Amino acid sequence: MPQRNDLDFYNRVADEWWCETAKIYALYHLNPARFQYFDHHISSWAGLKVLDVGCGGGFSCEYLARRGAIVHGIDQSPSCIAAAQKHASVSQLAIDYCHAYAESLPYPDQSFDVVVCVDVLEHVADLQQTIAEIHRVLKPGGMFCFDTINRTFKSKLIMVWLLEDWLRQIPRGIHDWQKFIKPKELQNLMVKKGFEAIEIQGFNVLGETVRENIEAYLHYRKTGAFKIRFSDNTSVMYIGKAKRLSTS
Image (cartoon, rainbow, N blue to C red; front, side, top):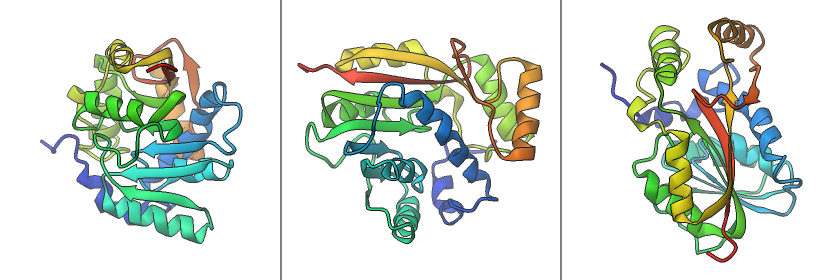
């Protein structure tokens, strides 16, 4: 059996991060849809101080920097941080990258207008501490934008058995189904840590039915793009936002 939640994978593929033919580049194609959702809650990113927690090689950081945000990114992989710094330099983008962990963010209290955390919460060592740290570094009224994976039989079927073990579109061992997070669990934790105005929606990358799953996968293989739909169906992936209480 492969090791689960194998985060060393990101060190191993860091040099491939910006290679358009690498499997990791699939994450790049999720950004337009993610920010289509986030843009409903943040009308303009220009001038906002934003932290990307778990930034990898910098896909979301560069996306935000090009839209005028003042961007900081942290990641547990030093190799990914090096790749992100190199690509930002070539792209002439001023992004402040730092090797750090989500459970111990190296920033003062109330530093950021927005914290973005995508494809990350299902990997962290301590979810409660991560949410507490995100709350700590947000300004009162600041926005937390996130997506993650639900812990259901369907998510195990699609994310682990299908995409990892059978199709090998995701490296085997990258996910640990036990670390996937039910929406209610995350919502309750965020309320406990001092968030309000929480919204969660289904982030359906591969459709909702078996037929849609197959069609979406074939479309991705042919075009390199995802057919993403937002809905009330959170059975596999979900996306959301929350605000730090203004008085917390």
